[in-house]
Image 1 (tube, one colour):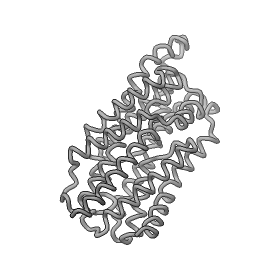
Image 2 (cartoon, one colour):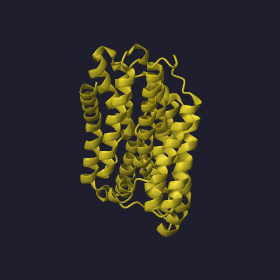
Image 3 (cartoon, one colour):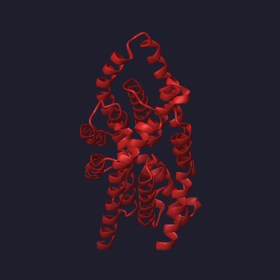
Length: 329
C-alpha cells in the first residue's frame, strides 16, 4: 500500500506538471489576440486568463470522464499506473519541444496520442478502446474545421455590418469588447483543457484501485485548476508571438471575431464531454477570420507548418510513449 501511495504521488506530480506546462503553453489561446491589438497589457491579460482558467476548470468534469475511460478501461489494466506515467512523460516532452520552437501544437493531441501508444505497447491492442479513441480523434480533427468556418462567417458578417463605419472608431470599440471575449476564451479553455489532467489522475486512481468510479474527487479538481492557473500566469511568450503577430496582422475587430468563434466551439465541445484542442480552435478561428479579411493577408506558409505539427503530434507522442514504456518497464 505504501508503494502504491508513492507511485500515485509520482503520477499526481507528473499530471500537475503537465497541467502547469499546458497552462503556459496554451496561454496564447486566450490572450494572444487581445495582447497583439493592445486591448490588454500582457500583465493584465495573463492575470485575467489565469483567473478565468481556474473558474472554468472548477465548473465541469465531463471531459475528464471521457479522458479517463474512452481510450481504455483502467479497471482492466494490470499496469495502469505505469501506462499513465509514460503517457505524461511523453506528453510533457512534446509540449516542451513545441513550446521551445514557438509552435502552437495541441496538448490534447499529445495526451491522447501518448495514452494510446502506452496502452498499445504496455497492454496490447485489445486493451485500446478503438471506437472511443476514434471518436476523440474525430472531434479533435473536426473542431478546427468548424472553428475556421465560424471565424470566416463571423468576420464576413462584421465586415458587412461595419463597412461604412470609420475603421478607427470600429477598432476602438472592439478593443474594449475584446477584454470580455478574452475572458470568455480563457474560461472555455479552463472548462476543457484542465479536465485532461483531472481525467488522467482519476484514471490512475481507478487503475490503482483507490476508487472504483470515474467521478473526479474535489481535491483533484482544485489541484488541476490551480496548476493550470499557475501555468497560465507564467505566460508562453514564444507562442503568443506566433499566434498574435505572425499569422496575419490582427486588429481588434479580428481578435473579437476569432475569440468569439473559438470560444463557441470549445464550450460546445465541453457541454458534449468532448476533449478538443483549444490551440487548434483559436488558431483555426484566426485563419478563418484572416481569410475573410483578405485571403492574401494570411501567411499560409507558417499556417501550413503549424497544421503539419497538428497531424504529426498523435503518432509522434504515441510512438514516444510506447518507446518509453519499453525502456522503463
